[in-house]
Image 1: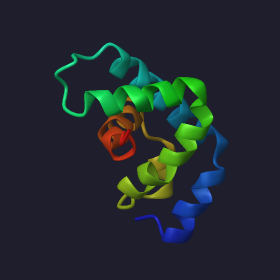
Image 2: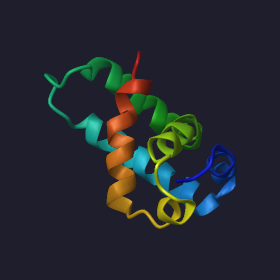
Image 3: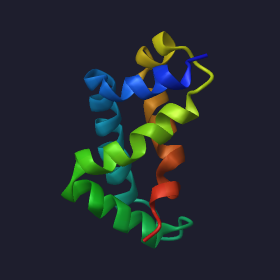
Image 4: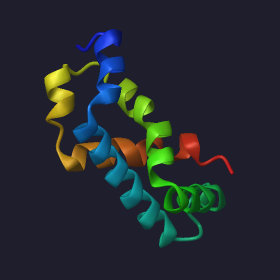
Length: 100
């Protein structure tokens, strides 16, 4: 399990941050074409537009939530997460930020 200090220090891991950034953009693209009946769809579209306008800013906002969601993993496990695992965490976190 990563300590809080280790989780905080991962904020400066540029490779991990870049991977989260791409996952945020992928999530925004998926939202752009999702069914309009998806719960919270209107707010999700607003969030997706914010991502396309400033991807790094939105990814930075989400980064600590993603790290916190992985608090039970070690630093090595977090850093070696697959792209699919990162995408799953980002996708699960979107509605926290898609508030309109």
